[in-house]
Length: 627
Image (cartoon, rainbow, N blue to C red; front, side, top):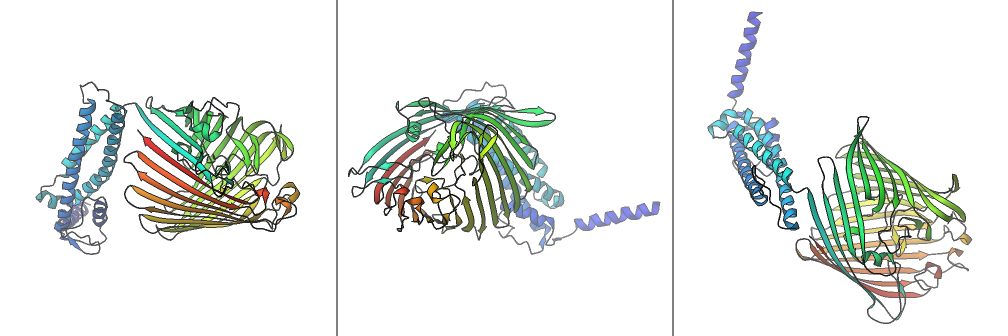
């Protein structure tokens, strides 16, 4: 036994001595991958001759020289980062023993928080590099010692810096304030003294004037957000201006103060499960076919209103079980406006008209990550909510509730993406379903990315005539949420360069034939081709332009469009030129001009707005400033 132990000890000593005397590091050694990580982090450019050669056997001395360069670069970054942290300490007087001084203004608070966040991000990048360097240092310890490299000291300096940044982050202001100020101008004019209808479904009167129906709108928003304590956070946004009244078409007064959002988030523990609770006026959106706010204005660019989220008053519970997430909510819809407080803001309908408005609603949403990964993933979701409508009529039947069911799937596999969504809406009277046929919608698509610059997508869309929901699944001209149509579609996106990109989509639809033409249902011989294409070009660092075209080519052949059935093919054309100018940090100017050229060719049922030619122009400009 003693001889066996002596033999093993001797063999171990011989092995360690051989490894210590090894002059070469063969390809495939883990150190190659470690060096490559430092190269990708920008800490070194390669080996002593400036190249990276993973397939060549290198000496330990060459590796040691590369590690030494990485050490010096990390050391310089830590020193520079330490100086930046020191500057922030000095500005807010947050060093130990000193009284923090209040910032001079809101912008100072914002700048300090941004600088702190940049420091934290850089620290996270350096943390991985230091760990990699430590592993390399243990393997090449003798060679590094001869070069004067002390990885342990570097690690201690890094730990000290990390502690300072964490302390500084705790000292920052609990409440941050941000704001925005937006001005908009909008005007229309007729062409050839004809009517026209804009994307906002507003009629351009044939006055012959170049500019008419001029509107000037403005809005200021202030957002207060912060950490009340380590567990509880809150946010509130107040807006002052006349823009909301403008887009909602409410009567004077033209200026109103609105609480856009105001909510608190806090965790609670229930039977050992953490639940995130949200209470107040909070944003909510789910999927295009279930709950997804339509765009209010297609011309003026007020960013706050482009997130497709409704704001509701109530509460929500969020459960996160890892691969499964559950969200429950109950809320009352609000109007955002004290002038027209009786009008609900969540409506059920489609492009043929509104069916009902929501008073209050409650529901649930569950998501399951069946597969998780960067290259391959699969998420399945399901939604249900019910909303009271008051006294309403749907398809000739009295209802007082609407139920919405939905299921969706999102998947990625290598360069392929798949998306499927199905939903249905039931009209309910007390506890009885009174409208539960031809009330569903389906959208299924598959996409493929040939490269970072080129991607394509193809799919199938069908929306039955009695499907209505507070969602947003598309637009054809001024028809929002088209229904009673079905057919395939295809899209392509191509990026020629960093400055020039192109996108196009075509939909080839026909009527579903599920309702009689006498009831206004589109028949299978009623066709629509919808085309959208656009080009974006960045002229300079400040100037960018875009040109977009939309065309709707109708071929109605049933009496749903009039009696006798039409024999002509109406066309709608929209040509839009946009110009953007970067005024510097947090300030942008956008200008838009659109020509509308539509010809209903005697089909009055399309409402464009006349049965003949409809031509007009729209000019809009938006100036946005963030502070």
